[in-house]
Image 1 (cartoon, rainbow, N blue to C red):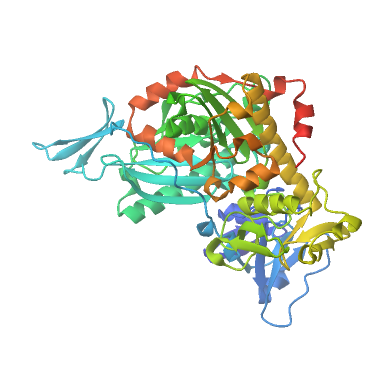
Image 2: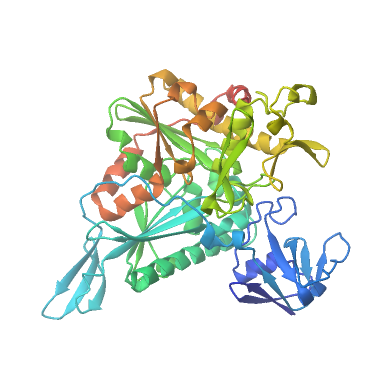
Length: 559
């Protein structure tokens, strides 16, 4: 057996010789992205090794690792690097979860404080009784009413956002975010359904997620100066598949017609039975889901935005790995979802990355062809995140670098481009690409990934409007939610055709409505009954039932 130590977290694991560094990281509980599940194609699982550690590594299907002449670090794909002796591995700074920029703020929901969890001080006995409704959960010594908190966790397919909330004032005490560790096993919903069906797959996904939620809960409790065992209720807000995996429930039914979920929500489950490190008698509340592919995150979004109470026509679109959307017309709601894929999360993109320090998040081209880009943290650009990707593609389409069918300008057409743009059209491994910086490029394959994601969301919008007998011009307001919603530009969405041009001037970015709605459900238990009744009245549009969906989807691929 050999020992692998991961820096800077100083976590160690003992593994059998021949084990890959990626597998060693998984066994050590160290988060490394691997959207290709370790086959070596995504390039996201790079780690750094130096000195003597390199002597104990071999690469699959390659010559031995060449040692640097000085004490330099060598970057290797962890999924292709096999361990043959004790060594230390460094996780690059931009891979560390604490640098992840996830949108944690959302439109605040004004609610009356009427939480499920109540605390009553008994002066004669000098104890505080903790109730969930009429159920006595615990008795605490002394007067602990000042420590009356709950937790909300927005469980996204790719990101997690947790908030510690004061149940008396409704104030968010602290927030924290992280990558969803399940993304190292499978990047999207369908992949996770398939992974969960493998031997020990479901248990692995559940354990990974619960472990990360426990870490976030402990971090938030530490920030607030309290013990996480003082938390008696957690609200999980997420899509239907995530709620299955978060409770260790097989999502297999979501992978076959009629996609009927086992978890319907609107109920509590015991936190202890899920391995959640809060109060021993603590509870997890699962908001009601709408359907197999329209989840509790959209239920929370309805509550956060109040679209069910608005007059007129409002469209709510949650842009992310899963493109969920709901149309409200004078209180009547219709919903659908479409598989947008992970491109908007920076995955399956040559130089794509999560929204963390150094990621290109904005991009513009001036009339003379000069380029201006912005990065998270104003750091040196190291890759492109979702909002930056949309900006880059939309600007290149607008300036003729990318044609309406998604192809880069041919050599003869490139002559018409400004010199500053023309010189950025390069060949990478014999294929056309655009150099965003000296080290960051956009490939033809990347453009296709954007087209697929854009086409899926736009086709979903088209069918939702069509089936409702509504034109884009008739929509009064468009609300854009999602993990990076505030970082998007309206013009990029319109230029790409992700949204109809008739939506111009009607778009509002509302942030993380999944978390905001989850907070409202935590603070007022009466809203739970209201939303449980509401979801039963929502008409779900199954896009698979439309015979011409593929035709419209292909049409929507163009820019």
